[in-house]
Amino acid sequence: MQYKKIQNTYIVRVEKGEEAIEKLMELCEQEDIKVGSIQAIGATNKAELLWYDSDKKEYSSKVFEGESYEIASFLGNISRKDGKPYLHCHSTLSDRDFKTYAGHCKSAIVSGAFEAIVEASGEEVGREYDESIGLNLLKF
Image (cartoon, rainbow, N blue to C red; front, side, top):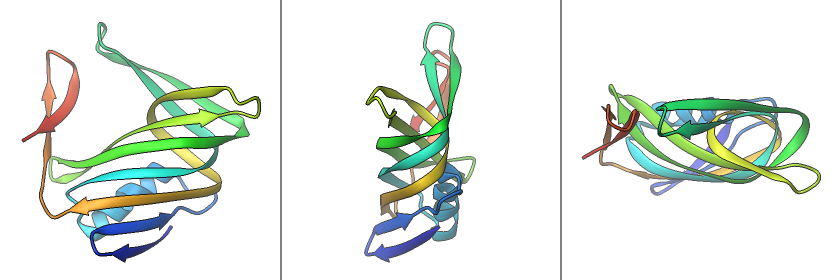
């Protein structure tokens, strides 16, 4: 991963073969980013997307691999949980037939490019588990 900081914005390039979420977490730790937003585009040849069933309060998982998928959209936010960076990211993948798949992005191995813009703030926002929903929600 390479990045450049311009005021409170980080321009990030995750390298081929690296895992995007892991590298974004690394950036947040290195730069002590407490709250922010992420937007990115790129390509992956192995990604895991999750879908949340709010009735059952559990995730389903699907791995996409074997061909290269365009990361047509990658959006997320950064907060803190138990003093550590917490990323909540969603992604839309597109295959060679222009079919799209979307969900919570658990992981994505970069197969070509992954270019992100991370907007950071000096403030801190936490996360707290909400039993009624079954998710870690923003805590103000």
